Amino acid sequence: MPALTIITPTYNRADCLKACWDSLKVQTDKDFQWLVVDDGSTDATPEAIERIRADQVDIQVDYLQKENGGKHTALNAAHPLIQGKYVVVLDSDDRFVPEAVSLILRAWERYEGDTQVGRIIFLKGHTVNEPICYVKNENIPLDTLREPRIGVTGRDCCDTFRAELFRRHPFPVFEGERFIGEGSAFFGMELESKGVYINKVIYLCDYREDGLTKAGRKMRLQNPLGGMYNSKTYMHPRIPLKRRLEKGVLYNCYRKFAGVPFGKALHDNPYKALTLATCLPGSALYHYWNRKFFKGDRKA
Image (cartoon, rainbow, N blue to C red; front, top):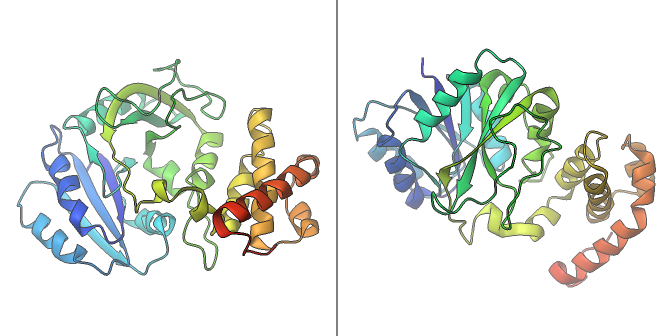
């Protein structure tokens, strides 16, 4: 059985898969399974996978097709097919550096016996010398919910997981919505285990104009039930107060985009004082974003 499963959710990215594959077939350690989950693509993704398999490289390539439901549902669908002891997600328009698998497995060898460590977190970057973020306290098991990631372009890192931990925390799915923030599943893993940061870029990314990252705020507002869930999740007392307040504002903002009455939103949220305290700023943010992204067309 492979030591590592690399999950690649994909949707209409046939033109990207070759570059992604090219970065995998040159890995210095090939003890991994590449699990591609096709989220209802309508392009030539199946043919791209056939060409990849024809490369005859000694790497296990598994391919699953499913109806379109969003990246989070593709990751959920991967759960029963995971064969590795560890899991990492590699998006179809991104690449690994040649020694990525080796570095991941060597790091897990170090912490395999430390059951409190459930995640080892490397860096993403535009190049190996341009990390998106970093942390000060690397190579130390710590509470990642309270450890600030430092960087001017975001908090995005390359998380690797124990497979059993990853399976225990699937993404919630809301009917009619095709996006939810990764924190909705990652939060449970962060509560349950400690993480170790390693300030080394192993994951190279150039965000596409039609990708989820570039889609930005408007895309999140078009999936407001997921936004409510994710925001409520991060109102937890383990989170620093400033961030809890920010999430409370977002919770109230998203619930207006979702058309959820305040009474129901308050009833469904265990953090009632925080929900009440952030009701007015959340409503103000709703009106601002409604004008900015929808020209005031969406009604609360």
